Image 1 (cartoon, rainbow, N blue to C red):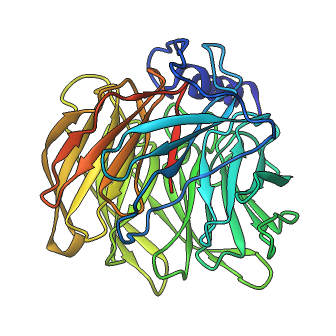
Image 2: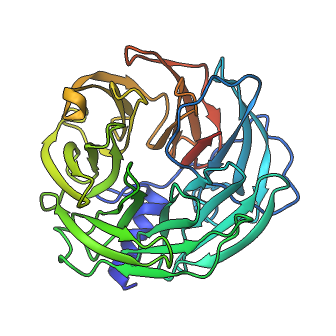
Length: 397
């Protein structure tokens, strides 16, 4: 990774912005923090699957930057939350985890996966039953910022922001990771305006399972691949070009599987995309408002409710959650308004498994805000945000 890429990554980690003026992260207090766990661990996050309403406290894992010069975390923060009230209670920390900025869980719920967003990127598996680390594997790239588990549970997909590459690792029956089976670096097209190189930001599976898609902020492109489920090899099938300088960051599919929503970090927009399951081809539509007005804003992530009727977008800078009505079977977004996120710089958002709560990890304020979600797409803050240093990912199980 060249000097330009290093500077870009530094702004991402320590200033929490890829464009505009950098700002140091504040130190965060840990009011009521529980004692540190004795083992070394990691955790991860994935797209929510609606389930019956749970009862009793449920586990929550919070990712952070441990190397932050503004006062980072010590590892994966352990907590529980009430499915009824949304109240979060801290229970400790899984220590010894370097920069676990994104988290994901295996479909069977037994293993957590975390990125190590370091120059020499890696991914790690942790068995949940006893919090035993099952090992780490190199991604072959730098600064991995996203991972996901293929729905079949046999393959881990990861995206390296620093090197603009995506990788595939096998998952064995225990949940442990094998050696990397493939890595692809995005060398074409050339980087977009203001970018020093490719910056892979997300790597996910389409709803039908036929393709895996990589969103690259640096090349303003979404790449579609077929994943060979026997040998873990990737074959590119198509590319979708966002407008130059858009900086696509994150893609979320409508549950109908024919449309998706692309968040563009650099030009502060969201676009509705058409998706063809047979070919994996994505067709990017016209940029739409994030509801942020004229101020500086870098949208981070969009979620769609399980019934496909509403969507919520995290706005970093404007510090709001934009609310959308989803219309025409997923083909149209209509902005309903925004609500305060009750924190600073919402880096990531996630639904609880039953979809009744929305969690927002606020990086600069070092908090996690929780909202009740109703059927009309309204959001209601569930009490005071929970303090957790440099909170960049919240994974409710």
